[in-house]
Every structure is written in C-alpha cells, then in structure tokens.
Length: 95
Image 1 (cartoon, rainbow, N blue to C red):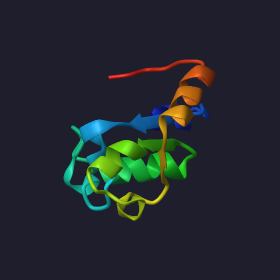
Image 2: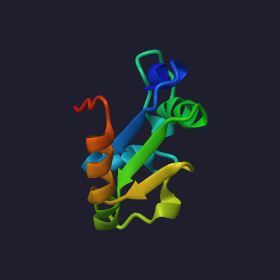
Image 3: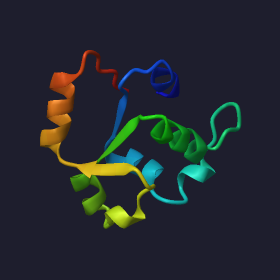
C-alpha cells in the first residue's frame, strides 16, 4: 500500500472483522513487519502520504469500540461506502 501511494496511486485499505484491532490506538505499535518496522509507523506513513483507511463501523460497534479509540485518520464507514469504493476502483485486491 505504501509503495502504491508513493507512486501517486489512489490507495484505500478497508479493514473488517478481527483485523479491525490493527486500527485501535496502541495496538498497531505491537505488530511488526519482517523488517521490524512497527505497523503503526507503516500506517502513519501511508495516511500521511495520501492513503485512505476505512474500517467497518458495524465491526467495531459489535466489539464495543468507539471511533475515538481508532488511530487518527482512520475512517469508520458502512457497507454502502465500501461497495461504492469497490465499484469505483480500477483494481481490488483482497486477502
């Protein structure tokens, strides 16, 4: 994702389910890449360089997480917005 934004592509990451934990304040700093870079730094670089992170609002609500508990810049959203993002995208990669 960071490479994509560095190449000036419009990149949006959408987080669902248990993966929503990655966007909780304080959690991403405990997760490291293979290079030992903390995930929170990678996410901050991504957001600072124009990337967009959407998080499933029903997913966080079901886990009793308030949007104030999310990393700054992460946007909670609904399925309608996610579907629109998929339909408007040139490419969609999922895993």
